Image 1 (cartoon, rainbow, N blue to C red):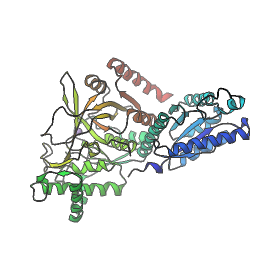
Image 2: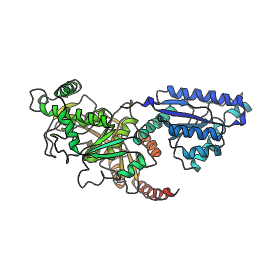
Image 3: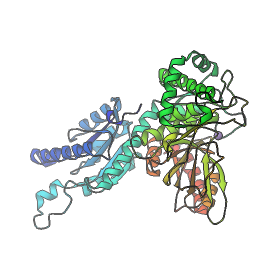
Length: 501
Ligand code: MN
């Protein structure tokens, strides 16, 4: 359900008529070479489209109009091989509503020491051309990403790749429909929020459906379809003995297959990218979706428990960003701690709904009673998560704005086996350490729910927040609580004042 190559980033080169046709032909040739190189780069997953060199205000404005109205254009990369006077860019940039990456590169990597002459100087002017270009974007208060370095450098391609993935998620976000089965868990504050503002700010369309709408489909699922899906479960997971045919929980596994088929039908036919449910509103369902929600996430759908539509949309966004990369992405909750002063850690999990894309080994399919909700024992996948870098990201509604918080983590292998844990889990040491991370997260009002990923880094989220024009806080190895508290206070001021800028 995610196809990044069908999305386009337009490669636009700024210049002017001053240099004459010969130089401009070279500028065009070089720019095309760079665009083609990026288009073939393994680091850049979208299609990079070369656009004719921009030499006049009319050409620039027309490009921006075209980019705005193109369905597949998710952003533009600009750079100035030569000087491109920036007043020519004002009218176009003022109306551009797609993300911008300003690539500060130069066609030639090295100075041709023994041969440098005025022709070289006339052609390779990005060192000053891109400063003029940068000024006007800053003057217009335009959010963008600036990437510096020679275009063939691996690091430059990687950073452009990150931005294209964030732009793809932003594009997806602006067209995303989130289905909520039931409302939020009663009395919970952080899962609430302004859905009208979310649509204004993000384009997210968040609407509630009575769980009965789902129940109707659940009850109409055929036994043949359930049989086919059970075969897939057998091939994909280690199914516990009591969940196999003849076992006491066999019907419980079949019921989750029924739920999965119904959820997939409802969400696919309705064009939804993400959904929520709540254990407090399961009227007509025999189990809380566990295995079913885990597998929906694995197919690319966003999910939020207890009505958490913000995290559901965010999980989907992280899935788009990380598509095709190593490592998975899941809905997550800081669940419980290991507070041993010699090495504090956090165990992330949920009642059931952790996505198997983050499993280190073949998941076990098990059925256990659930302590809350008063429903039948739900089937779920149980697994651990591999060691390595990860992030937790959360989206909260501050009342006057949205805030995104990301914590860089290091996942670790559990100190000991946890044979009685009936749910999937991830164990991590948050950066810079548990005490600092948790204090900063709590001061920032970060939710207990998050979107967890081992495929992407905080840079993806920073780019995404920049595109959305949303506050971004990063808790990482350099975070110091007293400095972080000041950042929160400064941001409080900034976001009040920024409305007038
Ligand atoms: Mn929860």
